[in-house]
Image (cartoon, rainbow, N blue to C red):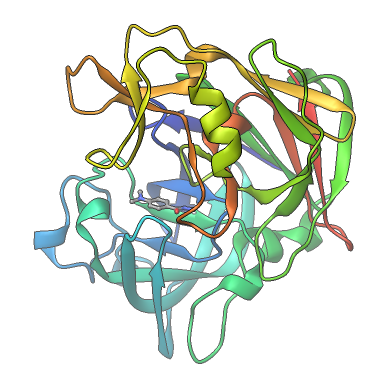
Length: 331
Ligand SMILES: CN(C)c1ccc(C(=O)NN)cc1
């Protein structure tokens, strides 16, 4: 079996996040989920979510599905890197993504979501694509959609083809040669503690020379920006007129009119260049002439994160074989 579904930016102006349609239950209920390789819980806004915390999201109502089953006594609670959080109870139900079906997928129903989820009206929940070891369901952790689907897939892979300000694709079970150019460079993944952790071979700022120092980090489709060591980030913003590290805005900002250099990172022998246009994320507030950078420091996080700003410059294969690897190709 295979599956293929669109990854649609939630905002036409800035690539904050991408959502992908899924169906849950019988008859099928369609929700738009944020596919997140940086976590491993599949959770949804639901009929168990207080209406005060719902603002336009679609919800999953297990009681309206003839195939839903309560996973009695199971609960979950998750907090993300940006401090947002959610928690709730658990059902199993039929689940499909782009024509790929899994019976009895654990569907974590939110009974509480933090304000950052309530205000993100176009995200009806998250679909974790990290390793199932990160799943937060108690007393028994649950498998991700990918882990449940793996045995049905021709090849135990999924691919991310995220795009700048346009819809991309998540494919499951196959590698679409039409989506990339040249060869795919595969690198090792450390699946402990559960992220797609790999080591980049180095970086360059603009037309500067390539610094071949290894950068270990996670490939995270659920994080908008790229977070790297401070030394790399300061080297980048030294090339941006008027850039400053703003305590007020919580990161590097610059005049939206500034000329930005592109940013290149290495995977094995292959170089990936993030165009300058991807490196300006968004105005700090609507209409402001001050822009927030797409590259920020990881010093406060504890891990380097290759988020959407980097991932949309490549075609990425998440290879769930044993051992797992990551494949990177230009496009
Ligand atoms: C508030 N929202 C929509 C979030 C979505 C995803 C994440 C995240 O850290 N994923 N790896 C955080 C927050």
